[in-house]
Length: 291
Image 1 (tube, rainbow, N blue to C red):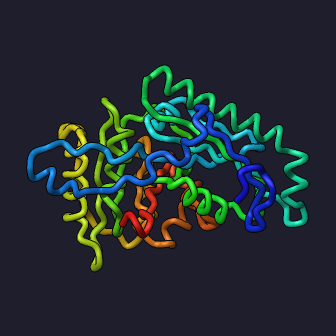
Image 2 (tube, rainbow, N blue to C red):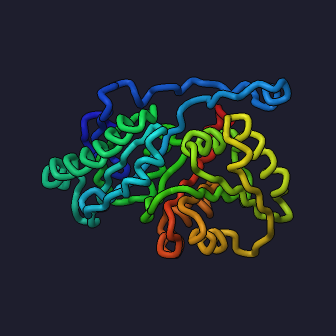
């Protein structure tokens, strides 16, 4: 991928900017190592969040898509990368689209970034915001590629949001609970309640994973009075998450296998996006060298 906007030959034309003026922001905290919060917890010490989580926020930049003020405030403590994308007809080249639409797209994505920057300033949230603009023929490939490039902890499905006071964290398969806890503890500031919901299966011990996630959230400073726990079974966990979304203001799920990720952000996302009435954060699996 080029830093200067030429076609990368894979899926789109890309331009980059660090909205907070830090040209090295994209490389920030990429070498942090986890030293095991289990030992620290055993010693009674609080576990610091290893690095500010990064949330990739895809926005249909030429379609006027916006984010609610409450969702922006919720995400403001994180490092946010706003990905302004536009899917092109097959016959339209990325170079042609860049010449025609780049200035308009850049203005639109900068407007979104400015809202995040203002929220971070007003709330002293401590996060940062960066932007990218992509013209692509394949949205799913673009989102996955950029998520990997910026080392995103999670990808946002930005459904409409009101005030965010209750967050559902749904565990239905293997997930890195350290990354999940870093994300949730960062975003779940004072006044936000968190429900950990685990789905039992033959291959997944939900009770153990929910307990592990709970302990890691407690270790990171989340109050026990703001944590609730549920476990159960479901033949269709994704459908159940969609149905439960009406009870909560935001949803956090693990990426799990390729199937769940495609259901959330891929071509098969239509029923999830249409059914869920809350924004969804998909926690990505860690890179191999971090696992």
